Length: 506
Ligand SMILES: Cc1cc2nc3c(=O)[nH]c(=O)nc-3n(C[C@H](O)[C@H](O)[C@H](O)COP(=O)(O)OP(=O)(O)OC[C@H]3O[C@@H](n4cnc5c(N)ncnc54)[C@H](O)[C@@H]3O)c2cc1C
Image (cartoon, rainbow, N blue to C red; front, side, top):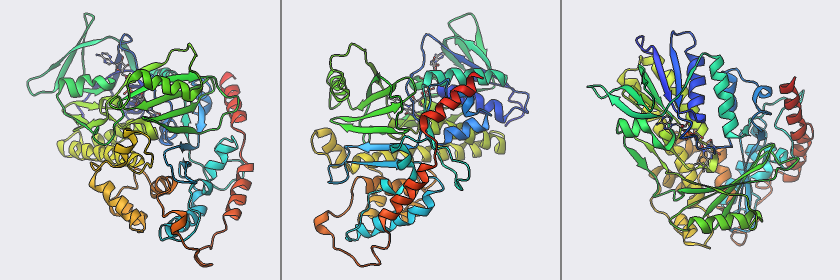
């Protein structure tokens, strides 16, 4: 961090702004730094984004938050992974589970890779991924991914939560760390003669001035894109969705700790269990269906055609900014970009951006060299996540609407994704290809294997041959027995959440 930086203003109080506030205040606790978060309640937050990946737990650990501090308050549940339903029409592959990789997987991954690899060579082996993962057994049995005493491995898990309540919680936590808070709407961003942000004019008498600014103003990107003019690079040519319609439904008393993503005619629907409700949202492309028809399709899917509960409609754009840190401004959250929510990666990107910024700012005292390296690293992360999500669409086998047919034949995919698909289809070991392209820091080989195997990108049953004993070296019944046996020792999901509620009340 540059010695002369004495003050930081974070503009925007959505989840991204509060994550940034907590992380900066924690990492730079030892510096004499004034951090103020400014937001306009009139504009409000986007209010979606209710599923996470495992790094949310790491972030909460770093800032000193325990599960008993926040989970009950934010209506949170555990998340062991995501089930993708109806993305593939291949027999036996109508759904599959994508777990968060964890230590016990190391014992069974060789069996999955072996079966999957030989299946691609045309040997008649079962290469469906779900059955190989403990997290899947936990989800189906409604068990929490909390390791029982004496279990020798660590689980890796994410959360589902009410995003508005998480923002409120993080606001209070940041206040304890000394972050100041101000309500104001920024109306004008004034630059100095070198093009740096000088100060902000607001709808009150006040102006706001700092040495460094964090733009967390959501899709408006008021500082980075609007005032500083950093270009936005869209990826709508490979990701068609630009709209969502969101609808809550009654909670389940004992929900499965997983997100369900079901493909519909023009996109997909998430189903996210909170303790107070299910969050449901249809993510679709307005180029293929109009908003009313999309809402009706969601209502039909949920069996709520006549319900008078109002749905919320949202618009979004997919892509990223060319530079996330420019002059004296860092963009985090939707202001820096958004890859659609299929793998719930947006908050992961926020944390990575802030953590990496702290690292590079510390190393290089905010010099250009480190700024350029930082920007390249974050952009690479965006692009790698984009490709993984594009792959979901590119390998879908639905033909029921032009939306799915166009997505399934889209030739605009990146060279990196093209080479990965060629490796899979050419029967090669894709772990090697992932390593060659240095992609495992974003989605590990296990995730790519799950995606391609889970959608049944294999020779058909008619095209395969029996194979010898060596090929059939893993007995799937034994693996299932073993995993079910492990799962038996895990605590029930709801019991675990009740314990957290009691701990919070105490
Ligand atoms: C349909 C959909 C589903 C999603 N699902 C997921 C998911 O499952 N998992 C996940 O990780 N992410 C998801 N996301 C992304 C997630 O919602 C966001 O990353 C997250 O909410 C952070 O948003 P934000 O803080 O960047 O922006 P916002 O929540 O929009 O906050 C913007 C803030 O800026 C303030 N502001 C703006 N302009 C001004 C101004 N001029 N003056 C003062 N204040 C201003 C506003 O008041 C507000 O406080 C989803 C997004 C969409 C669109």
